[in-house]
Length: 280
Image (cartoon, rainbow, N blue to C red):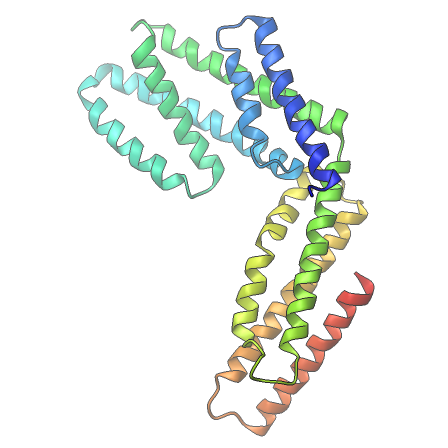
């Protein structure tokens, strides 16, 4: 069953998309559809905090992309024989940045969309391509401004705080369960320290991404944010101890001092596990 937080956010996303389409329809602006496109792209992560971070990256990437598109448009106007080469290079850049930072990806997407639309649909005049770039920028800016206003001043941060609290609880449960299995006395059923460290790191990946984005959507004084940061510090400490244990486990010439160190670290891990279970 979807949580109440998920259902609330789903209604918020629908409301944002409907509002953007309404604005585009009411204004009857030729480039007004980009308002809806911008908002739809921003709310893609579904998370309020991740969406706010994405809106910041989108406006930066759009500005950089429009500047590059302007430069390329001027260059290609006087070097039209280079269109084919530029197209191939840009396709490669798009494929490369698709797995990179969203800011760089949207920059290359903006250039590709603008140049494609200009050369396919616009008359080849001195002012028309530049005016299209300006209109595209204004539409994206309006879309992002509309999203930020609705998200921050109408929806608020309640949904974002609840989402962070749920993610934090999930990480706490994962680490508590993993440490319980690791500290079992039976070595045959216990995972190695390295395997557990890698597993817990992977499980906490989405939590860390959400925590990093929460600075954009949640007040610094929020209880949920402070608890999440505390859990993240404990998470880092546990991972370091597990990696230290992994080194000790793979040391063939382990001395008595090293074995004592390993035992001591497991005691510390056990104490951290109790802290997670009782205080967080």
